[in-house]
Image (cartoon, rainbow, N blue to C red; front, side, top):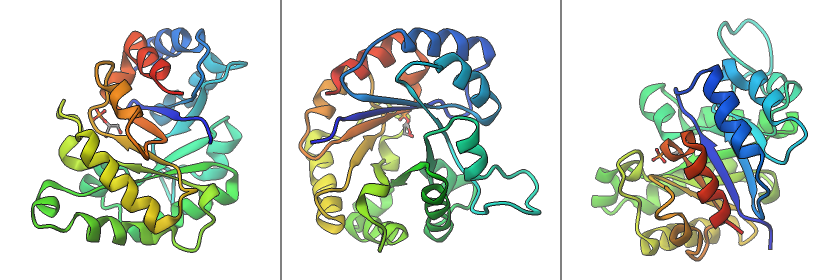
Length: 236
Ligand code: G2H
């Protein structure tokens, strides 16, 4: 069985001092699990320097659907790879909701990540309305179209129900186990599926012990070195 994976997602937060202090502190620890951090684009190079020589991996929070060309404002997968990234989040629900990300654009990004040697962390998950309407499985099955036909060892999935993101209220272990089981049924048991949505120091051990959980994606709690380290140490 592969190691669990804890990935911090700083979202639109942080500055140079925090990159140095928080990542510098996290990098001093040894973890049984794999650990990664996805920081805003302008700080990737500084984060790479801060994490140099350690085991904490660097990632981006998004990536262009294009490899190169006249696409002002975009950052490509080969560029991220060149500056030291090992992974990129794709189609986080905030990007689906606020920046017109779709399953179709996600599919393009996932393939470019794989071509560039980056691990795509593809985010899926249902809204409250979809869950209440009994459409959780249908929503996720449609989102999983973005990885159909891809070898399961070339990408990872992050299950992030939008109703659990940044709310302080994580999905329950039963809900997480049900959806992770559903995703693995669809993709095959070799699929690595992480959970995201209000993971913190106080619930990390229970989330990480839930059947089918291969790791966690941590937002708010990854900005605090002590709490992020606590979460990383709960993973195996
Ligand atoms: C979900 C998660 C990280 P938070 O978006 O991707 O954020 O832990 O703040 O709910």
